[in-house]
Image (cartoon, rainbow, N blue to C red; front, side, top):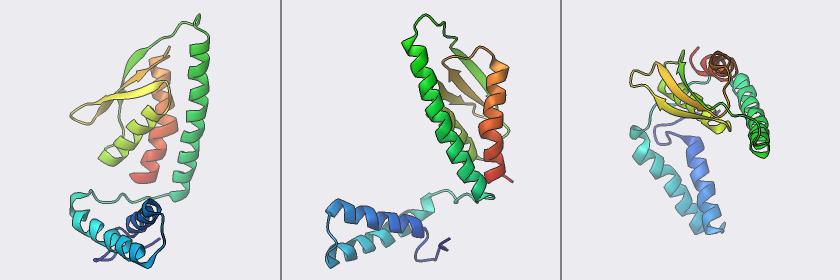
Amino acid sequence: MIKPRPWLPTPLLSLLLLVVWLLLVRSLAFGHFLLGGFLAVTIPLATHRFWDAQPHIAKPWLLLRFVLRVLGDILVANLEVAWLIIHPRRRLHPHFVEYPLMLQDRFTITLLANTISLTPGTVSANLRLDGKSLLIHALNAKDEAALIAHIRERYERPLKEIYEC
């Protein structure tokens, strides 16, 4: 992993900015490379004090497995929602669920809420001000306890292991 330096607080972001600049101008001319490099160094330097601290990833392989699981769940949920739409005779059970959180860090709560919203059929609607629970709307939730257990086992526990160990 690339270590941050005082003059380069986020090296991967700087590299990304340089690549995006070169793609935008569609040229590898020395002047564009020089200007892109200048922007890639100065933009993070000027804005790094406004950012939250970067999270420490305790288990990177578990993170990769989590991302693959979420991508698979998104694919399966898309098929399930399409099936529900194609067969209008099936009775939907839309439901709001108050989900009690085990997570405490703002970053991991945000990741969990985004993961829930990315999966078709569920949307994170609200986070309580105390940060103890998340309001989730499910398109087809017959059993509230089963939905809570599913989210806790598939998403929340791995995020807690990855980031909050």
